[in-house]
Length: 154
Image 1 (tube, rainbow, N blue to C red):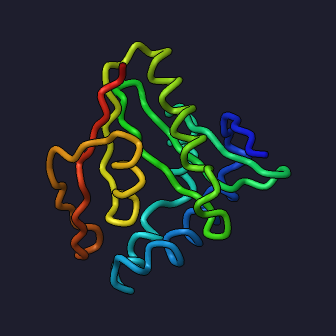
Image 2: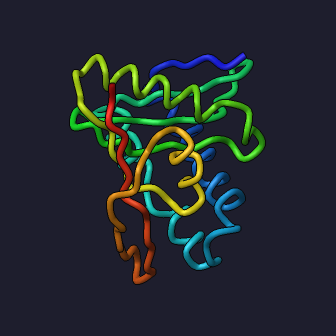
């Protein structure tokens, strides 16, 4: 059974480990080795701690193990959606997105928007998100192209 709870700063080491392992395994089918290396090392502990502090940051757990995380800010920007490499396709991202949508509703937001990786685009499309543009970004001299996607809330 999946449980969802708010993250706190004590969860940051586990969040970092899940993030790095997920990027290095799940995303390798869509990105080069250089892109994966830059992406997996893009954020340090202080940045993660700040994100947990200032965003609505949720964890998915199964048997007290963190198996996914997601976050949204006050503007409706969905910043993170990651599921543990060993727990893919088990409804975890769906459960996290339902929590994100519930928080967006509580905040009376009209839409949720995100910069979505190639790997995650099929999931977001299946949940009603539409692409409205591409985002070209460069991290440590390595180029990435994400889809800017949004979902209008009912």
